[in-house]
Image (cartoon, rainbow, N blue to C red; front, top):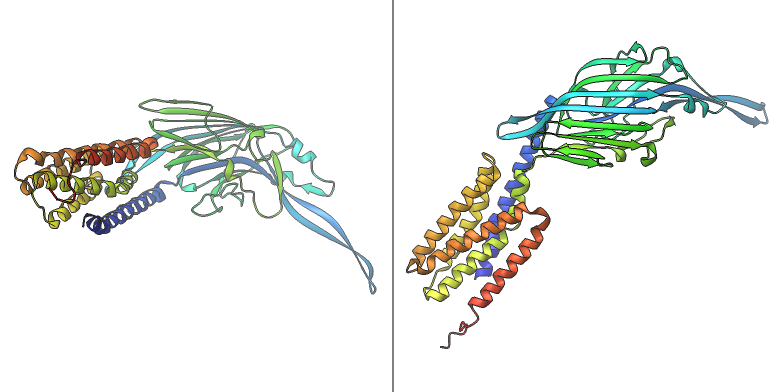
Length: 433
């Protein structure tokens, strides 16, 4: 009978789990709407220099009618040159924007790109039948979204000012996930571009949300990111060499050589651009408490916390010799299932752990009072409240110790089974005495 009731209660539990997933999707949709208006996640790749060129080939053909014929075929290509030195510095302030009860962390600040280019090696590697047009060279910065650009404070190439225009000129460099490799960005025609080393200094005011990713495209790349966010999560192909995290802010820096990643110093493109997504790295503006992730984890353990109250009520029925109808068992199971619904709804309005405390306390009091109404006295009734309270304390420990959740859960299950065995070791299950 108890096994049948547990299977029956899996139906409302699966419905609650579906509700948690639905609310999570609604939160993601609200976050996407906020991000769409503010500026998407910041993914930056570049700058790079692109120089149009052409490859000339002679194709000889022979026919009986016309004899030998020579055809000149010209194939356009683009010579792409990465920086010799690249220094990227990002300094951001963060804020949390809300839409209804849903929120998303956003950031805004400055993105500084400094360094130098030396195209001499790339040009020297050209084949004799390949020629390029230096007067059409462009500087390109690929971005995940142009909407996040507030303004360009300064941009210089040697002693000349650069005038940027929107568009990445077909050089996505990385895949942005939501729209494949289309991306966006900015570009500028390079004034008086020559086959010698030149320095650049670009300062952009930019905004975005959720995370920052950078492509280490320079021969030597140095990246520093600082923000007033106190819970960063470093992600991607490279972890920072140095990082400092306090209660109020964080800072991190990376030094990456071209020998440690797959991005070449220069290359030729004949049609499609190159994709170096695997080399991206950066920071997630991680929220320490993800309400819907914690609710999902809590519901996963629901079956265990249905069995324990049932066993408790069953043992109380045996030891008090007071028969209990299946309906109270069913109501007790529903009462414990309602805990997860209370937890979900309350955690959307307040902090998760405050919501957890209120929901656990309410269900514990309810189960204790209900047990008292079923049993003759408080002598055994308070055991139900104790067991329910310990169960929620154990669940709280599991939710907070993600790395040790399996260990805590397995030990807890073992203790419950051992305790039931101990309490029923002398019980006359056949009722012969």
